[in-house]
Length: 498
Image (tube, rainbow, N blue to C red):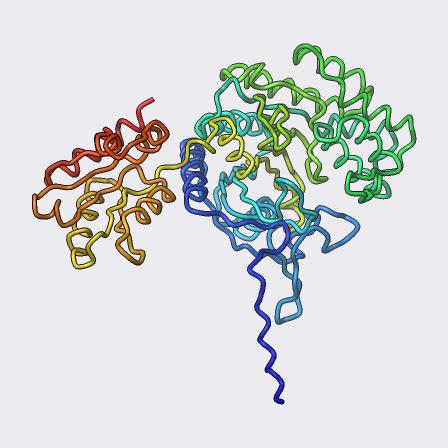
């Protein structure tokens, strides 16, 4: 008996770990939000820059997140000429390369913003993806900390343009020069200490997520997370840990008191004193422009985990509460951060070219906006759907759709199989359509159409018990053919009213 041929193995329809798909309304929400942010950046005199997704590993250099593994944290591969390239880890590395490559052609200072996906080959988790969007704005070629203060003010404007209320976020600023003064006091300066210093900085940067106990563990021998994975620590001595934790908890009732405390901690460190003075200069400028506390505050716990920051650092934190997947109330946390990096472009050109900039975590900001607006119950509006109940009338249906589009209303004709009314209405519901246009043989003969307000119909459905009540409901009305546009416009205006 002949053996049956083995069936070809079908591939699994699944994504790699740490990646996700974005569908219509999610993409639209992101595009609309980025458009509003881009307008703020544009009004401040920043120009759009687009760079390729791939950079040479040599260009990435010390941008890499793991100093012990040259390819750690990035998706890299060898090109056909055996050189190593990688997907961009952030938007700052491409900017540094551009600023060096085109320095003779670009204005100085160069002000640019960039938006797009970045990729990180890190352990995925809830809300942590390996591909996500960033939205950056940077000024390259100026050393004044007023440029840093301007970035913070622009960030405040951008968050408000995106839909976050002025009372719902705070921008926290600090200065790495102050931290360097503390590191100097703790014996963590110098090239030999660079690995431990990098671990320490990333540990302190996780204070809001891990708490003091978790950070102390990472500053010491290491920490095991809930999954059992162990993260190597900085192996600092107890007195070093106490000094660093004292620094991050140096915040006081106001900026002046905080700066006074920081002056005490940095002692005679020239770099530390310079950092405190820069914080005072930024605070004075921001206050004069209407960005004072509680909107912008000096907070020593902000350090930013990457090792390339050389001066002011800043983060935007949302202060309102959201309900997490466990049903517990919590603050949303950080959605943007950045700082000054005066040495990155110099890697390419052998001379200093200072820069400062901020990066908004687009996916986190979108999640915050949805949580704030409870948008799980307020879906983005879809197109008006013209039902196709008679296949020989497709031309007429398309004419109606065109008329609606010409008036600025999204519209489509149902293109699925069959002429079943219920099936087509279910499709319109899945599309979050505001209304459906229904034209059968009776309507066509009388020169009328049925227009169904799908939003109102859904809200009334649970109250209707008989077919007679359903026919009489105000969610569906018969109008003359020439009244389609006005009727649908009225429905959409009613739905969008507060």
